[in-house]
Image (cartoon, rainbow, N blue to C red; front, top):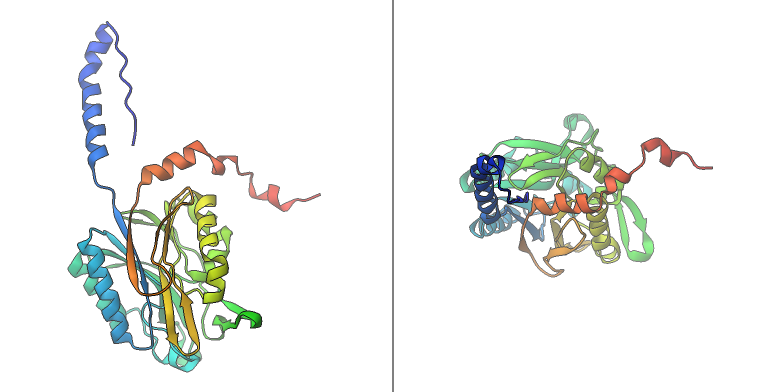
Amino acid sequence: MFTVRCILETSAKYLTSLPAQRQLIKLQNRMSTLPRPVAAVCQVTATADKKANFSTCKQLVEEAKERGASMVFLPEGFDYIGSSREETLSLSERLTGETISQYTQLARKLEVWLSLGGFHEQGQNWESDRRIYNSHIIINDKGDIISVYRKSHLFDVELPEKGVSLKESAFTIPGPYLLSPVQTPIGKVGLGICYDLRFPELSLALQRQGADILTYPSAFTVATGAAHWEILLRARAIETQCYVLAAAQVGQHHEKRSSYGHALAVDPWGEVLGDCGGEKPGVVLVEIDLEKVSSTRKNMPVQQHRRDTAFYQILK
């Protein structure tokens, strides 16, 4: 929001400019009363039952729309979470398959934007290599697919003392590049997925390309979530001075896997605006105030103070 200053002068110049100033004041007042856009950040407990998963997600999207959301964010694995590599691969689909078709129809019917984070998308050479992408899909309120980001950093981690053992690269293809932020009703949204959160280079690249909001749909393990989830999300918000929206999986998916939950919304100052908790599915709604992005960056111009890339590569 801009500020209009009226300076009283006994001059013809002032008298001539008065109507224009009045118009500016009216515009300012009108802008101050406009409702801010609302984002809905969801939390689910996906299983291998794709029909049940869609039913749960559909209910959350409908609830969010009824409560005024213009964009709804669903987590990584919103379509399903398999109990084995074989099951995970057997349930995967193309972007043209039934699952995404259901969501494009839902977006069109409700006239709402959707962020679908972590769709199991069959790769280009699926018939020969049986490998998939972990894909973050943006659908607009007309049901059109606007953007598809494929996860860049794959989660290959062994933490025996924490009971964590996952090797995503065994069946997943890393995405070849980042995508420019997507213009949406709530602002420009930069796309990441889960483990991408641990790489500040990605978030800073998206911020430099104009992102107002970063989104990390996730399925964090209980161990890593308890230790790092909120800290990382707040750090990404603080260093980029963006909103950060992170939909999440929660609870037990099958006997070998559970997720941390705590779907979060964080503002550009690093303050947590909403938290879905760590127990059950749900949705949290937050207003997106783009003026707060601008004022935070203006008052603490971190990006202007950043040195060029070469400076950080030379140490003596």
